[in-house]
Length: 255
Image (cartoon, rainbow, N blue to C red; front, side, top):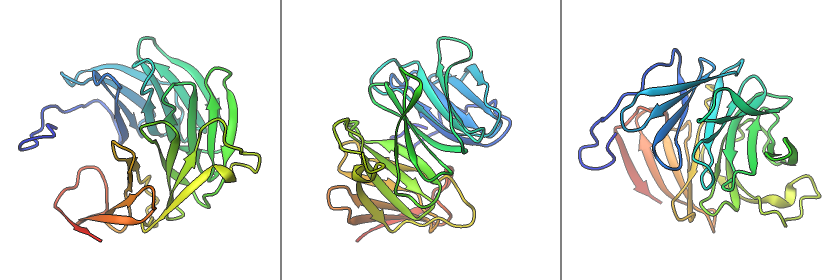
């Protein structure tokens, strides 16, 4: 869609045979990467809407996808129910790396410099993976239910997580932070107010462009927005249906 004016639709990306669960622009905005329940990732030309490549290799639903934000625009990472996170390069065919976990992976985020990948899943933990050594770097614990989304702040110093335990949390991922206690010291703030329900949807979360606010989808049909420094809720956007791609008809209120 065009984000200005009448928000007219300018392209339709087709080709998947099941639900599209996540979508990202590459950092140069020339391509769009899609993750689907058909086990496939699609690579589309952002201007023409033409699918130029398919990434096939996952053996389960692809729940999430992210791209490298400051490094090469061709690097992609995906998270799947097959208990793996896979690395892809839009310039080549096939995967270029694979991180194998013990549980289904439901969320993924690429570090800004491309050297680390963060995953979350059914083990309620956030795991950092070293891309250069292709092994686990650390694990951050604190959530008590499945993690549904991960998002890095613009500076790349903190990661935001949404979880089925009804909380959003921020985590300090700078290298000098003491994580000897299993990641507990890396937990920074907890944001309360959002909810999850029996549908077990993979609700998303995000940062504002300046990193001063965070937001997350919620099963109560409300987009909650919090002030990041104080962790206080500052704004509500209320929908007529559960927060999910494709719905509009909204109003908002400030608290």
